[in-house]
Image (cartoon, rainbow, N blue to C red; front, top):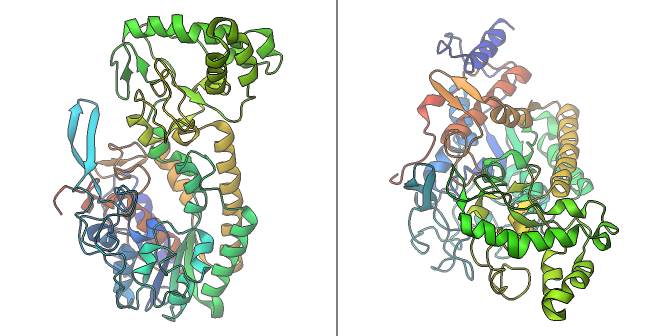
Length: 516
């Protein structure tokens, strides 16, 4: 207990500007790390900057853990490496059919357009990847971190087939196998399980538009309990982690809800010009606000008048968005606009603005939406099936951002409810199977609220400057993964009486350079 107490102090010291680490013998405690397997999703794989690549895999938290475990008899830890540090996959020698942005090369920081606007782009054009999805690697492997995997996918037969996950396809022992079966075939003595993020993250990344629904809590509970039971059978030891609220990731917190200004006043602004603001008030926002304040609308929705406010000159103005949780006032607006616009145009305006409002600080604008604001809607992204005509041809300004561009409070509530339920299941499984437990939710909360300090460094959840997250705003960078690994080591020390020392976070970069 003396050694455990001293080691615990060293983990605390990492957040107290104290670089002194006591010389304590590294011991495994009651755990056996000779055969370690890691199960999880893209976080376990080491996904960073929008891609999976070899250096990122080296810095995944399971790979970092395995290096620590080697000090106490841990065996080899085999990783299904990508071929390069470009990242991304080829399918039959070509980029992903139909959408080259999927499985594309990694993102890099190429400089700044101005003092506050980063130039982030692909390290190489699509097609320069060298990792072929159809080439199967020789196993067995220890890292079963599968980008895109949800809880139930780890139990799904055929997940390594051509109809399954292309990352698992590369190293599955057979197309018909399951991730869990391949992991258990290694006869592991110790395991880590961090899964469930994608069960709600897919919904969040799609703006809750219905294309990637949240996994029902009952389904998650059944899948997770099955995984925990089989992995811990025979008293095997392991470590599990709960889930943060994914909407706290910089992917969802970076773009402001009110970036529309007469001129660029600060980071994230989208300048629209004084003349445009005057015209918008006269031609769109004034008439729309007047209609929404009419008794025909307020009788259907008592709060309809608050949906729209006039633009202000010299300040920040809110984005125009569509909120499908609102009462649809299309028919009322059509009636009110018909005398001035005529039946056809009035019906079009009613359809476009029936569930429109201006964003508030309760809405979260997705990171990719930043490049959409002010652009012309197209047939594929307008929600109409055709591009709207001028003047309704500027996203977020004269045409509402669509469901996939943001998260509204009702969608954020759904994320919270699911995450809380998932975390109850994970905590109960850790208790029932006597497993070490990592409170990843608390780690994320600390990154958001003040961050971590160590030595001369500071880590937070801020995009680009926080040091914890990569350029995609979702996945950690190398230093972020090292922070996660330390949290796993600390949990293992507490549960099993091991005496692992913390990893020096200062040895890991906050962003990967263009050349690796």
